Length: 252
Image (cartoon, one colour):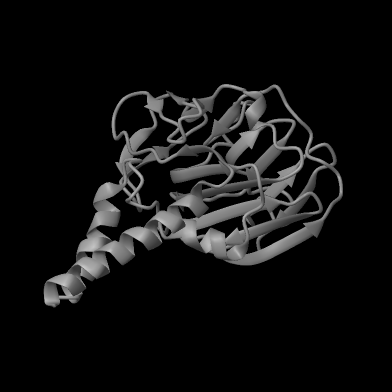
């Protein structure tokens, strides 16, 4: 009977994880987990081919789930070549973990110039903002004081009408706009922008960058904060299998 119960627990976890994994992947266009831990390529784990090139030797470091990338100045960033699939005119979610090493005033976390931006710039210059072109519409966080050495999760969404900003899974700001996001033929930059100014570069560590072609809701954003599902072979198996083994052990 005990053996059957253990088997049931493991099967239940796998089924629940599979459903969770499907929800994480619905509309996922690009996903950089930075788990290579070496080399000059940040692979797009979706298989859609949006691999990024590490420029200026950002440092491989430990992140919340596997490895991550530390950026020090304007010469360090990840460059993802333009693709039409990275133009999100009607709906989008941009999500990432970040851990600052210093002052974030006017810094850029992720930019596809002429289209959408994750920046510490508009409004309160240390809030994190999700800004879209052509009209510079933006939503900003209420959080504007970031602790060095602390991990935060950001998500910015647009559903065709409203821009929203979430910090650590909590909605902190929103702004109405009925204007579609402007498309752009420029590349996507992570950790800096294509102006190349040192004052724009993000000082700190970035991990788990995701782009969706739909607006995730607050519950879904909370789900991706928990980390990738181990039942999908995306380089995260040690984390999720640890969760499965812990639950299995408790069932014994």
